[in-house]
Length: 321
Image (cartoon, rainbow, N blue to C red):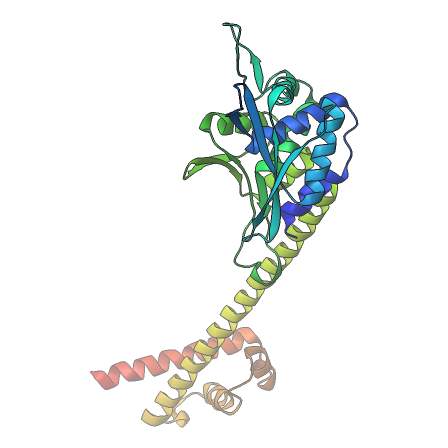
């Protein structure tokens, strides 16, 4: 189970106590992927989808509790890509009409008929109901991935809510921003996607739902990834230092060889000659180890090696002229 599905599992694991929050949660689910259609003999029909049998049963029972009727039309389709079953719940006739009005999706129109109401209405006025609505919205139209397993280095943090209209995506983004959660919107084919890529912002979103267990899981992932990043940076830094040391060592050995073949090491001052011979004899020594062999400081050793390199460069220049 991926991280987004575990968040949804946590959402369904917590029973909703207040009747108004139950309606808000169901409204979020229906708004997330619900479809209105014309029923037989006129009127509205409503259908929406839920992934997983347990969740579909939970939503059916919740609707029965809120509206007082049993769900009679449920169809099942296989989602082969995600290896799961998708349950489509369909409501028609007077029951659909009642559901749509009580969830604040339809309202009375001026001409005596009905019309679709605003995305956030009376049903989300209470903050607890707004949170329940967002939970329902995430359950039906949301997903979330975090770095994990062998592919952790190739994946990032990503949370999204998918909408069929730009206005609802923008309105949801604005409402979340009012509560301190930043998001962006992009178009994907015929959909408008509200997305969050910052790990901290995703954590804020999940904490807002609230889903505290998932927040702790995400925090563990963030800490583990930061430790890995620090470790990689140190390895890269260490590797860079080793490479630089090898290059410097090879450069000074070439300089010593150049002096030896042109002038001979006996032409060097005694301390430089001793240093050159020691560098060749103990080529694998670090600068600290070589300095200890010569009973001098590392600073003094560096000074001598620079002097040897300068002499080699001058020798090469004279040879060219």
